Length: 269
Image 1 (spheres, rainbow, N blue to C red):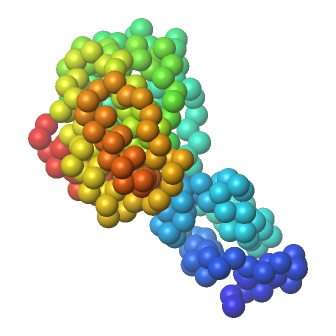
Image 2 (spheres, rainbow, N blue to C red):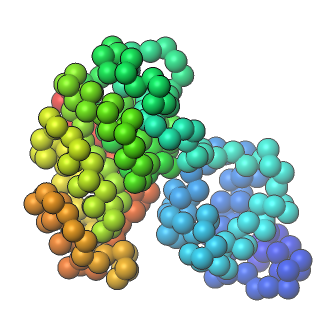
């Protein structure tokens, strides 16, 4: 039993979770001063679901042990992790606009009119639904052109600017969670686009890749794989695959696959 586990059990009178050994390796990385990915990525790398370290309802025993150790064993300045808490609620992107400002940049609604014709540094960009995955991909590849979707945040400024980028001939492709809500969000975003083909939008997250990832990496969950309504036939195929297999895949599980696919897609520019 590790020192972390011993201190936890002595202080709380509770037995550690069966997953405690996995967390001990993460704690060792903190002690060594390593820069960690966002917490969702940390959890998936340990074989847990993405919300296990952020939501007490997902896995209470793991959550309790993890946060007890962070609070009682480490000083706040020791914990170095890429944050998924991106500032702003409008439009966050990296390496899309021709600017020497540090990346990523978050644009508010008052800036949108001026940005509609602002010089660009790319004609291709990847829209990433998950805040943490966006932040981690940018950490791994600081020059990649990425746009953060931030879940259901389809605000007016976001829609205005993404349509303006289309008019400047920027091509968008999309990456999101492979569960029912994730596919529905992808369908919603595609429906507000005006010049992007479905082939380009799903070049990375294609129906074939969705089936492959569900088969190889899928986790069983009836709630997250229920049938929801979508409009586009391609997303209907992906929704059907998720529903029929009864499996879902979180974006954090696919970082390695993303790196290979994005590298090849950007090379076509």
